[in-house]
Length: 160
View 1 (cartoon, helix red, strand yellow):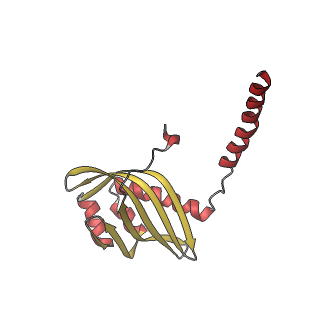
View 2: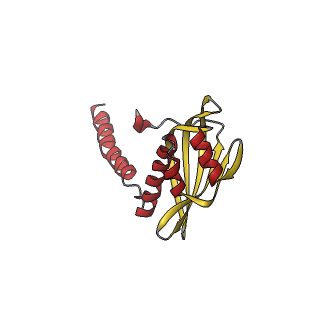
View 3: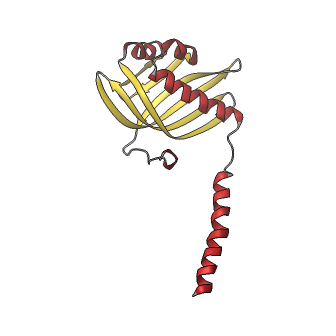
């Protein structure tokens, strides 16, 4: 019995650290992916802070925005933010992925969004698709689309 317990402890001692190393040695994001993830996080904060002028520099002139209630272009999105028609109060980001194809990047955020829409505070789980195009060495947002999920994202254990 004693040897069984010692054997079990040794197995855990050997296997668990190697599993932890595998998890922590996941492929690192390249610098372009990190740049886009950082830019996206800044964008969420600028939206929360209603920094329409800063966002105007990020949004491409031909950008499109798809919401649960409709779709529109850059000027209307900025007007909605300025007027408070939609106040993006807080985006809790649970998952992020980035795919880069030539000068185009597709970023997916799985979020829980706290917003004020038409004077009502609402919380919704979304997958948000952001499409960026790199022009003149600078990323511009070409599309932002919200897809409401049927279930909220799983809690992030690192935030506990």
